[in-house]
Length: 369
Image (tube, rainbow, N blue to C red; front, side):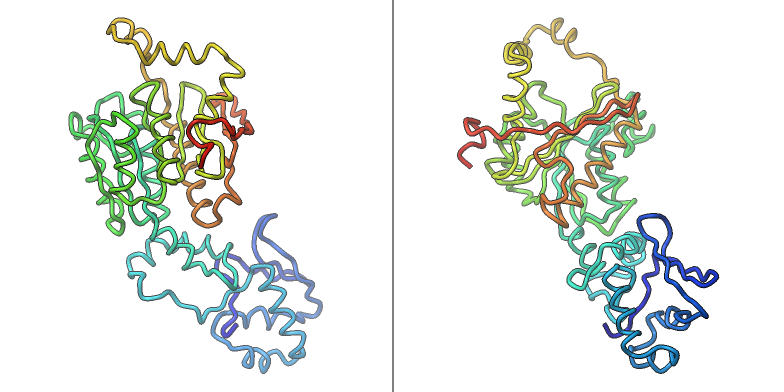
């Protein structure tokens, strides 16, 4: 530690006979400070003084007391080394845009990983998003705010009036435009520091998805597509397991929402969830096959009800997924909320539940992987 500094994210308040560093129950500590014993030390931790200079200024404390105090504050996460500067691969625009991110990451940083390294990990990540409707558009926005360096978004639809209650990348001037074109315009203006690519296509098989994964060379897949009904989740699952690509998936059905993840070779896959569901609802297999084989337009119209997803529900899911992706990038599966679990929420009562998932040895998709 060359230039110890109390992290800017933590406030310092000098009270009677004590010093409070940080705010809130999760971030604050109080230091007993009789006769202002530690006042000069705390004020010297401004990132401009070396240990030797601090020792010379704080004559009422021994060097041992100063070193012990700094080590303790460092272990508790309140001090950083101000001599560590961002490397040249950060542009001035990135440092300004992500300055608040860096403030937050300073609460996570350690002697091993700096706040700049956390941001760098995000910038180096490429996410493939399937579907840029209600949830997908919110995910695009939230990942861009985080600073994910490259996003490839896939959709085949056009912007309609009914999209505008929840699909935040579009506006009335873009009615009738391809969503991929409208989204690219918005995202390039919102954050020109990232690479945002779009592909206008309708997915018709798991091979299509696997090809998208390999050609884009993505690190993570997000599945928020809802078409073709009865197929898309299975296709994405197969492609991600075959390509060993982690996937995060979400849906909103009127007042209810669901989120899950697939980590190939480790967690249960979507087909495992299907096997779980069959145990609870044995008729689910017949229902799925019936849906897949509907050919009559009148019957299809009766089955496919209008969308009932509200904007706040899509926003919630979009930012939940963004946090899950961030956790996965930083710590792998260790801190994933949806690792081998399915998250469910009732948006009217806000009742939430995590359901444990089973990884089946007989699963035809992931059992041999």
